[in-house]
Length: 298
Image (cartoon, rainbow, N blue to C red; front, side):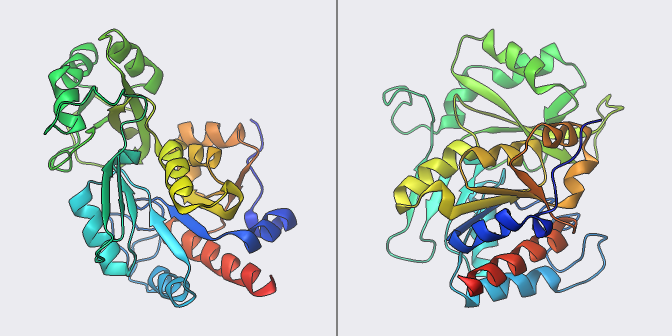
């Protein structure tokens, strides 16, 4: 078995890089939030204010935090309002919103490699994806192995949200046979109630416009802000989150990332990643503390 990446707190070069970071892109479920999507709890689910206090500290310092999540726009608007942030990237990169609660608010669909004239006027990206029968193709190819991630698949604009126990590459081959520009993105380990024939871990999956992913959306957002990758970092718990490292100067993973065999294998192949000693929100709070300590030395 290959070694895992080092802990961020033990890496002098990573700690030095934190001094130049201006923005944090964060996954939510399994990273910022405890089990069940709870903020006011530790990684074991015990009531705790540790993560909330870290959020307040970053807010007081005027630092920018942007959730990057598989959740939809309505869900994320409420999340960012609740914690005092203004921006987010939803549906694993396909919906970008800036300036919540301000006259400058911007809402845009990120359709990746789609040509400008592909999406008909008045339609959402999901309308077009549904017309291509992507869901039907996947469920036909993998009966009782993949399904809508109910009820959270509702209210979406740009992606199918699914749950299942298939390999991402196998699902992509099925979508490629449709001859349309869409991708399957694995968004990490989840623990839902389901009736699938899944002996292995169940993951969340998104069917997205070709080329859309969290890293691509972050690169697009950084360009809009006039920031360089070296001025940004990201934190997550899944292989899809690990890929955010392609867009930022520093990628951190909370300790529970190694619970998923798929994510652990990805971590063993990613020398740029750094681990936190805490799981879920406790790891997130650790990163916040290290960030503030590093900036105080700048």
